[in-house]
Structure formats: structure tokens, C-alpha cells
Length: 111
Length: 116
Image 1 (tube, rainbow over the protein chains, first blue to last red):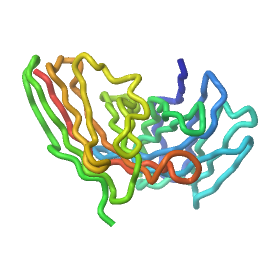
Image 2 (image 1 turned 45 degrees about the horizontal axis):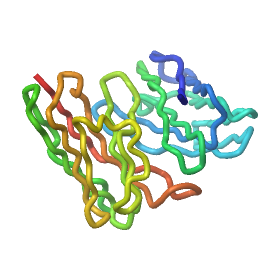
Image 3 (image 1 turned 60 degrees about the vertical axis):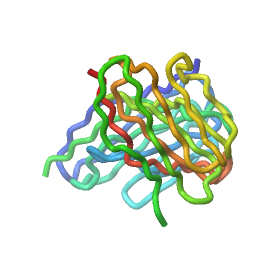
Image 4 (image 1 turned 45 degrees about the vertical axis):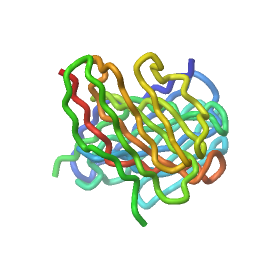
């Protein structure tokens, strides 16, 4: 069945350093979504990527969808303490299919 | 705009007991999802409704889990009987629809279930 792998599982950075999390699928994806979950909170939608090679930016966050639509990444430039949380990717095998979530990357930012 | 509401927020039961969770999605959202999130893992879809019809329940353990969405609005998820491995956070989410720009999912606060 479809699997979505996410690495690393944990990342600890000093405030101001950059952070990247990677998402890989065993099969070609129709689209991929990214969510952020603060400690004790619920997932909050960040973005959806649909096109091969797509790159989207939200302030300090940069999202990429691979050319083969099997991998994606989220890069945060100059992390802040407000970036703390777990970042999940969720991939869809078909346009209307279910989301398969990765295990998430838990980001800790030291002030 | 009100978000997705869930209740209860916490529930502790003993194994073999039954439990029910309630979800009220965002007004106007046709699609409703129930996820199970075990500690340290990503959410796993249990069941997905489009209005009051089931779209995907392939990963719902149907021998013990059931869910309904009467009238295409509120939904309940039931576990009977509960097992120790059911301890998790149960998240309800809703979206405007399926596909295109309509499938951004809005999650509720979740119900943390502990089975002793």
C-alpha cells in the first residue's frame, strides 16, 4: 500500500538556524499537503502542492514538490521559537483519494 | 468563523467498555474525516464522509469501530469494545469538499482516549 516516509523524526536547532524536513513516497502522488501541529494542539494546514517541480513560499517557509511527484520538502529560514512544533506531510495517490500522513518531524528551537 | 468542535476532550475507560465521540464540522463543509493519532505518529484516516455517505472506510476496524453522519452534519465515532491499543487521540476534520482547492482540512481539538 501507499507509504509516506518523513525524515528526520526530530530536529533541534538554535534560533536563527535553518531547518528542513523531507517527505518521500513509495508511489507517485497527485498532490501533497503540509500541516503544523503545536505541542498539545491539532494539525493546522499550511499549504498544498499539486504540480511537478512546484515551489511555494510563505514568508520564511519554502515548500517544494519534486519533479517526479514522489518527494517534497519544507525549508524554514532563520527559525524562530514560534516555529516549534511537529511538521507533517500528507500525500494523496489520486486527486480525490485519502491523505497518507508521514510520522512528522518534531522541531525544537533553542533561544 | 467557528472551528470544528469535538467532545469530550478526554476520556478514560477500561478495556472492553464502549465509548463514543462527537464531532460538529465547520458549517457548510461537505467532507468530514475521523483520524486516529497514536503518540509519535501522524494521523491515520479511519473514515471519510462526503455529506452523509461513506467515501473511504478501508482502515476502519469494523469489528469494533462504527461511525455515522446523520443528516450530513454532525458525526459520531463509536468503539465497542475498546482495546488497550485504541489509546490515542481521535481527531475530527472537515473540508469544503474533495479535490481541487476544496480539500484543505480543518482539524478539531481532538479527544484523548486512554484505555486501561
